[in-house]
Image (cartoon, rainbow, N blue to C red; front, side, top):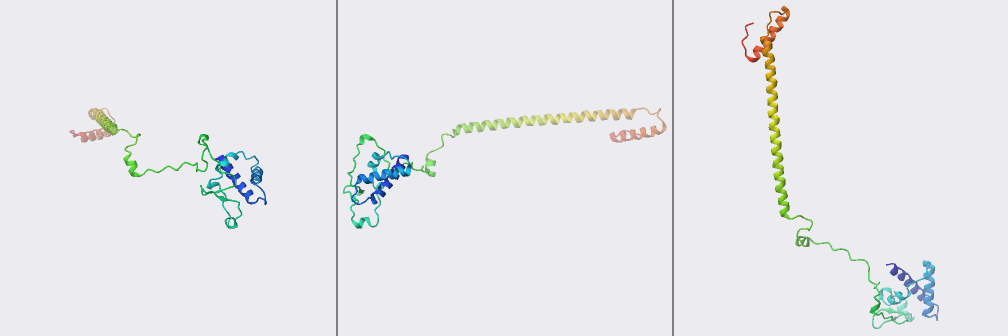
Length: 216
């Protein structure tokens, strides 16, 4: 790409010098002027003259004739009989296949990737990244078994919790019953008259709570 850009710049300067060549000037003058213009423009010498000589006869690198050039018969360009391109007075340069010179006339950019159609994606089958359906089924069965085991553990835990809660309630009820029974049967003969009324009222509440006989 770098080489192609440099050759393209020099090629334009060469055609410009060719159009502006003084009367009686030869191609050597045009080349000298183009090299001088290139150095003035790019601040370096043009180092790809050989490559430019290879590609200069290609239509892509040929000068575009102005409106008055084709009709004026100025003789600056002639049409090659075999290629149909406009060529300079210098002979065409033949290239030996042994040099393996890249064709810089071709677009070096790679073609954009083609998007796959739905049919191509479908025909391609499951992606290699996907798991085997049998493995998926096996893992699903393992998941169901694990979930069932977790649910069973949860059920047993809830049953144990309910059983423990019932036992705790029963123990509390028994404790309250024992205290009520003790209070109900406590003697009141040595109580002060004011405290006696409070004790008897409490015994009547306990008797009513459990349905016990109460004659006081």
